[in-house]
Length: 153
Figure 1 (cartoon, rainbow, N blue to C red):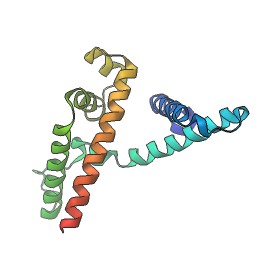
Figure 2 (cartoon, helix red, strand yellow):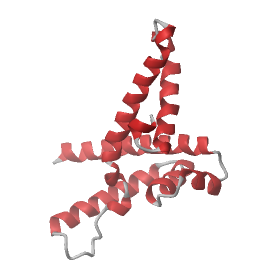
Figure 3 (tube, rainbow, N blue to C red):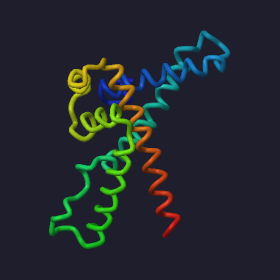
């Protein structure tokens, strides 16, 4: 998974997610001799999904939104950036506090996972779980908000 994902932290996240999915769907495995290949296929799919989400990460990062005071952006870009910031702030505010703290430290402040866990006095596994849940909740909220705005246009 390290080779497929490209870095150790993502590979660890993928492995945890793949093992969880495999455990949930263990009844679908017909031949236990192919368990390793079956698990590898699940992990590859999880990694591909992660890479797809990573391509959208700048949308989820407040720091990636252009500065509204900048004279480089046109009025439409400034309005779009302001709307996106508003949507992101609203989605972040809706997160439970424990998820929001992990998300802000890990994805916005870009602190290493072990540092986030240490500062919050939780295990690295707990930090990863909270981060995964925070990203999932944010993605769901953002999808719903952006879809409703598209429909209202």
